[in-house]
Length: 500
Image (cartoon, rainbow, N blue to C red):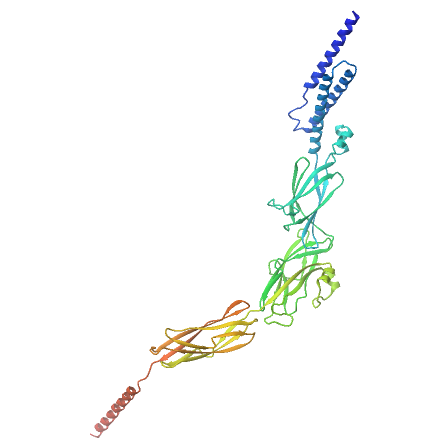
């Protein structure tokens, strides 16, 4: 009887354990709102994990005592493993949700090669710290194994307002960004902007897109200068303009002087504001304005000189100096600087180039543009061709547009070249046809040339030629004699009448 009672008690205990194991295997801790409220889902998953772990420990004890089979133990271990994986996934979801990257610095600076760069400092400001672990009461070894203080696979790029990448390289990757260990990355700018969008992708696909205004590197105490039209060809006697973009990189000075060096004094120069209305000698930057625009105006003389030679480039520099540095340097207008010397000044500068070009100017002079000739005669007109420009004239041609059937003789009809200020005389003879009618005729004279591979022409001249009608001498004599005879007869007749 005692053995039977012991058997019944053992059978009842096994039945209870089987029911508990089956209930543990069929228990599903997932709630459809766990994805929305991840912290509560994590607590639910942790409780299920702890319950499954306790049940698995009990099942191992029973297995060691021979009260359950290995299949029962494996089923309990499977339930425990699922609960553990679910708990870790919930924990990772919470940790990834708390991951956050901030930008503590975004500094724009100019490199030695003149290119603009941006230096970013990225900071891991995630909430996955020891305080977070204590709040959730998570095992420390598990918490460290999940590395919540590290954000992996951080991708960074710079965009403009049109979401086009303007950084070189286009994208940079940080394998890991640790909490408390900021990372600094450097980009070269493909488009010069003062505000950019910083696009971040990190962790399990989290994204941030922040538009930030770039700080200026204030350690150099300089103004960066750039000019798109840094090299220009300018004709003598004309003027030109160089655009200047000035960008402040200084934490000390905000007022700077503009100076030009290595430009011959024969060439006039002055600085103008962005609207070209006001002449400038100094620039002042404000807290809200770190970039300004100005222009350098140059005026070339009418004639070449020893310092201004046609087709000989003139390199020169625009310097932007703090006011105190200008006082130290004194008068720098008459000093010739090398680029190494300018670089040693440690000030903002830009190298410009001016190429003086000459242009021939064709002037045609004529002492008289009117001739009166008989029908059997020729009109002779003299012209003076003069080069009043600043470059040699080549291939000078003189052409005349004649009335119908007229002929011409131009000596010379072409001139090989005329240097600056040189002149030449041209003789033109215009002959009418034999049956020309009396009247006025016009001849248009055109003069063309080439100067510096460009066509040059002068104002057309118009010669007026009057062809006189022929006079009949015999008829005129007969008319005169008839008139005299008539007058004489009248006089004689009058005398006779008076005697009567």
